[in-house]
Image (cartoon, rainbow, N blue to C red; front, side, top):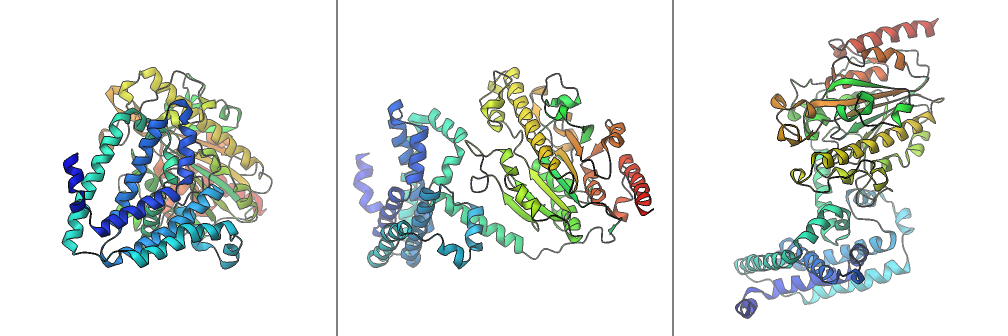
Amino acid sequence: MPAIMSSLPRIVTKNNGFIILTALFVMLTGNFSLFQRLLEIYPPAHGHLLFLGSLAVFFSCLTILLFLWLNHGKATKWVLALLLLLASQAAYFMDTFGVVIDGVMLDNILQTDMHEAAGLLSFSLLWRTLLFGLIPAWLVLKFAPKPQQFGTELKSKLMLTLLVVAVLVVNILPFNAHYSSFIREHKTTRYYANPNYFTYSLIKYAHERLRSTALIPLEATATDATEVGPVERTELVIVVVGETARADRFSLNGYHRLTNPLLAKEDVVSLKNVSSCGTSTGESVPCMFSVLKRKDFTREKASHHANVLDVLFEHGVQILWRDNNSDSKGVATRMVYENFKSPTLNPVCDDECRDIGMLHGLDDYIKLRKGKDILIVLHQMGNHGPEYYRRYPQSFERFTPVCKNSDLGDCSQEQIDNAYDNAILYTDYFLSQVIQLLKQYDDQFATAMLYVSDHGESLGEHGIYLHAAPYAIAPREQTHIPAIIWMGKHFDYTTDQLKPYRDYPFSHDELFCTLMLAFELKSHTCESSNALLLQNLEIHHAQKIQTLGK
């Protein structure tokens, strides 16, 4: 250690030393929200003082690394000045409003007009911008040392990076178990790390914007689609895309535990023999909305074809995609997309944001579109593993004891099953709330809900856990998925008409034409469908139209 200290003057150039000092200034002045949340999680009075100090070093090291590699050459002082200004603004809004600066917030900022921005001005904003943003930025521009030769600076950066990484390792090792718990159970805390998280969000947002505006040739689908009518009422349909749910854990399908107590009270049809298109979210979600069948599907092909949302949108259906998972996997690229994975939009966030938060504000959305067909897609966090116990609030922990270890092999089968089944129980609650929402509009719209999971999950059968096995050899636990349908009193079809098909073999391949049929669109694209149910429902619909015509 003495040898390292004596060599520091040779390692740290003036320019890189200035960068480190600026990073530490931002860490100290721009992270009140972060430190406040850390103190709430780990109160010093409960013996957490040393770990809190370790966390301070941890986040400081990450900030130093970020600043070191964002700043190069002559642009250094300008980048540092910009980071100081942005960090002061991010800190103010996080401290004052409790928001996080993620992609959603960045989009909101870019959509804000001058009138709305003026409403945010306050004396507090001005003095904090001046004290922690403008004055430090001016000092940086005035006193930043001139950069040295590129090779010298690069060598210094590499040496400093190794040193900071070494400090990180030494800092983490005594608290290894604490960090494991912190990273696993308090993921949302990192959203308040300033400027690390908003820098990450800005890069991700820019990448997504560039990707969405890229000129990708899009092949039209179902161009012959026509509306069949007359239309008695406009449709309001909610499609819930489940996550990692397997059919055999639903009591509606015969599971011995009561995992669907609320849905059992509703007039629903549970289709018991449905197969997924893939064994991962990245495959199944784009596949289920694509016109391509599973045997022909690739994500590359699908990206060049209009999906069912595109077709419905072209025919006037108002479409909203809300996501509490990773993202829509390219399905909603051209639709209104809202990220409920962060507290910016989702009002129900503790250690993680809950699926039920996606229902917030839907009343306003629906009321503003009265008289129009509406399709809302809600993409759940559902049963995403391996930490199933984190997918539900504590009040839903009915089956105990539960596995609270990300390494499922260290848990008993009973603990894994209990945690997984509790998450299914929470999905039951979420779906029942979706139905209650739709019932409020039963007299104004033809309402319906379709729940279908993206894929299943292995819970230790044959020594296999989780999912994403190659489809050709995937166990049934990963491909046998739940699908539940609820229909309001004015929908074109009834549960009695569906019940005879509860055991009929369906798959994700039928979703495209099912949604077309739900919104009364007919196309030759769907004439080749092998689904007996779809064919019979089309016959029924034609008979109903004749009756209405008379």
